[in-house]
Image (cartoon, protein in one colour):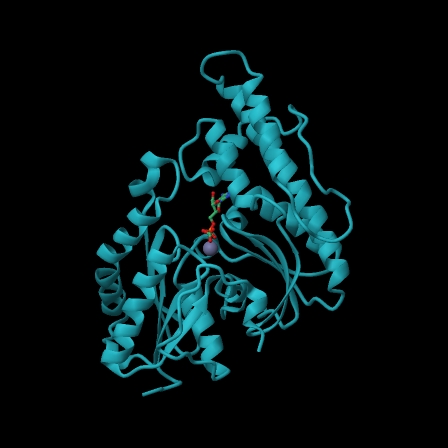
Length: 348
Ligand code: KG4
Ligand code: ZN
């Protein structure tokens, strides 16, 4: 039975984090759990889909039970169950949505199939996260391992794509550049840490599409330039000071590109009430600081969720579930998983 005042369970399993969270109907976080699979994939230098799916399957039930225990609830106390249904790796999506549907049937609860990108997009509206909850429309800069997008967030389920990556996503550029620098997977946080030791002006790197019309992104040329800078280094192990200079120069190039694209995106959404950054790369301190300056120059607040809510988590899935439930947007148990699921296709 649907009870709109009851808490909602959210499940995330689209990539390499297994996560569960329980939010009260007003958005208060009652419990949150994230289990990273980094150790399972590290030896392969990236996420292995089959290993990810099996790890989700092994971990999910205990994780949900833990979250329920922490919240002092059982399934019968919930009002709905939401799970990421895409985009992402099909094996993990099937594990998470299959679990959610099974629990929904057993407990007689409604089910919500959540778009992972919408979950990132709406996180900034989580009560208490920003000084004031951003009103629609706002500009979303989605910066993750699979996506770089400028999105006009016009309402729950209403998204307009203003610009997107023409080649590699920004997180992918971080991960691939980190790999050629010999850093461990996942590369983004490791590269950020190394960049702190380096000189951002040491290596001249390209800034593709800078000052170009619109707000599309391109990072593959920058990634190639990093590989060339590493290849030009003296033979043998890359000296740490040089690696740090390359990392710092790469991060500065990315930051310049993002600031430029953000400025162009704002021109396409003159009524924006706020700028929101989301996705794993939004956890990067240097990038957050730089984008904050751009926002201030436009007299707009920059809302960047705390780092644990930028990278993949289930709080964002549960929150998107609450927002959708408030609009009566429940899903049928026959709702499929969608490995590819662009935000624009959520239009209602
Ligand atoms: O949103 P997310 O957790 O998963 C996807 O939906 O893709 O983003 C993961 C991406 C990875 O590419 C990772 O290297 C990057 O976010 N990332 C970072 C940082 N933390 C995570 N990139 C730069 N700096 C960071 N501190
Ligand atoms: Zn994500």
